[in-house]
Image (cartoon, rainbow, N blue to C red; front, side):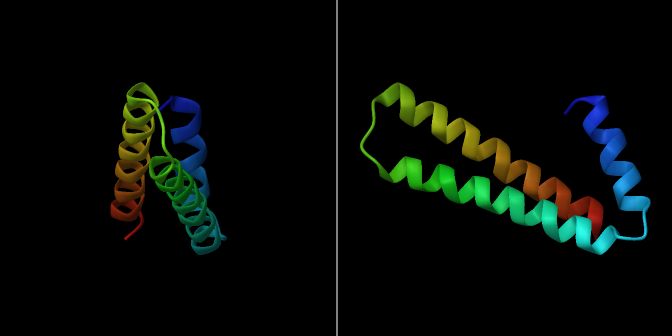
Length: 71
């Protein structure tokens, strides 16, 4: 993750709308994960499958990190 994103994340988590921000961010991650899951269900080349699978893993891990730092 780049430092710009982390700085904004830290500022948002420290703000008054922390809970709203967390829910919005979680929803965005979940939407991306669902898009990748749908892409994985479509017939594709092995290269597309590998790329989608790698992206899904990144988003899943990001969501886990987000949940850990917001508890």
